[in-house]
Image (cartoon, rainbow, N blue to C red; front, top):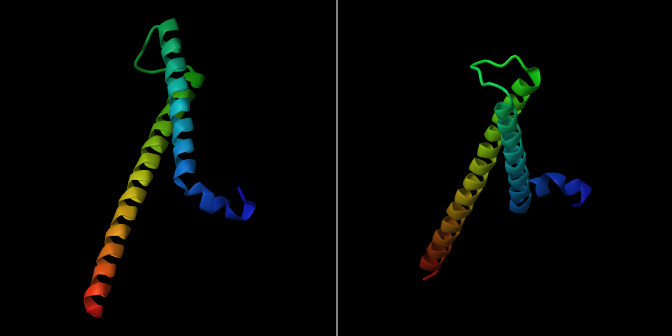
Length: 99
């Protein structure tokens, strides 16, 4: 990755896919850890354990990030499709105009 082109790289599909994979792995690990913690102690409606509360907050944040990344990828695909459709229409119009 060229230092001056970091922002461009961050927008590429491979980078987005890698980030999504890491976020999913972290979310899975947190869920596993949370399940192990829940088995070890009785469950309650509220938690007094600050570490557990932080894990829950991190888990929720990762869920939001994962959803946002998926939405951005979907939007990117949709925009690519729309761009291709516009290019095809433009080419057809240019051909029709030249006849």
